[in-house]
Image 1 (cartoon, rainbow, N blue to C red):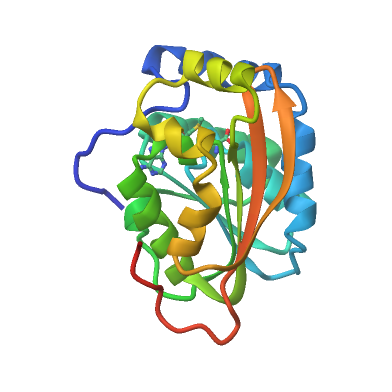
Image 2: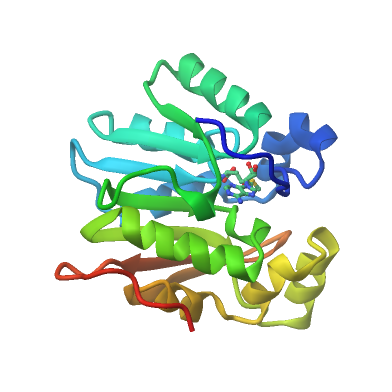
Amino acid sequence: MHPPKREFIPAAGVDWLLPIYDPLLRLLGRDALLRRTLIADADIEPSQHLLDIGCGTGILSVLLKQLEPNANVRGLDPDPKVLGRARARAAHAGVAVEFDRGFADQLPYSDATFDRVFSSLMFHHLTPDQKIATLIGVHRVLRPGGSFHLLDFGEATSGLHGLIAHLFHRGEEIEDHLEGRIPAMIRAGGFADVEEVSRHGTMFGSISYYRARRASDDGPASTPV
Ligand SMILES: C[S@@+](CC[C@H](N)C(=O)[O-])C[C@H]1O[C@@H](n2cnc3c(N)ncnc32)[C@H](O)[C@@H]1O
């Protein structure tokens, strides 16, 4: 799949930092624990179809397949360099994960394809319009009753959290997070049962885990507010 040429913010902010992206993540502290919590909470069943949007170097996609070997796992990212690393990670781990090149707000999948969609630390790379388009698309590709699991920067509940997040992320992409607008945006994407399940302090700021469900008797996604 070859999406049209478009700009995006790469995994580590700039391309030349990509080789140290994984070690940087470990600095986040609790990274592995947060991902395992996200997966455990998703209550995955064998043979389900799982999608990891903005999969980066494939940490979450590969972990999903390792923890749920009978699930069908796909990762999606616009950056061919991180996709190369993700494929190498899967090969090294000896697991079969498909990786596609594409953008979160233009998901190249049919309606109602997936049981679970995950996104970890990607959402703050998107502008507000891209976030809403992504959420509408995630709602579309989820089967009714399926769920979306989002790990990313949360509301800045202290000046320090906001300051730290701003140090690492300049631009409008981070503001929806720090201002606590993510749950309302998820609802605007058409989701029911939106919940901030947990919140974790890290050295890069406050990270929240949000869970949302596509209603079982759902029609098309609602129009954004
Ligand atoms: C900080 S990394 C997170 C990677 C991975 N999910 C993780 O948890 O390690 C953010 C990723 O989002 C990707 N990204 C940026 N803009 C995107 C977009 N519009 N759609 C999908 N992914 C995007 C980047 O290429 C990068 O790999």
